[in-house]
Length: 130
Image (cartoon, rainbow, N blue to C red; front, side):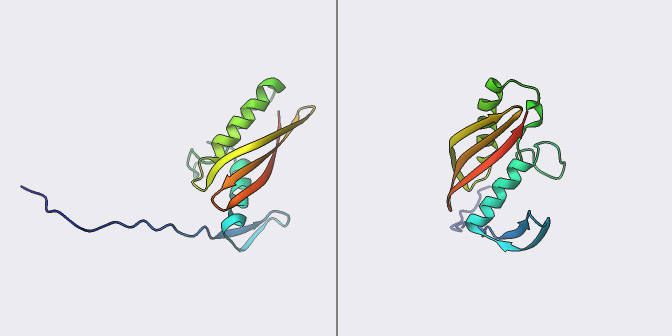
């Protein structure tokens, strides 16, 4: 038996990045954001959610930071860099993460970096306690 040939082409259409707007200062969600503002919000959420902790989220979403508590500075700094890159590059809109800078104060690490996205570059930061 032969399978009939088909000339039907499949077209993939990207959906807009329109999402609900999170107002962190007032702890409410209302309105919508898209493009670069949606991307800033996505970066914040990805880096604020511990990976593997929430059954409703896919295992590829979030970042692993809890196991860094009590570890030495010399190990934490390169590991945080790697984990931030890994977490953000899961998002199809992120092209690269670079320009990392680290400031330590006792058991706290402030990481600043640049996220290259399809919408443009975003400067971001993450504070990690270890």
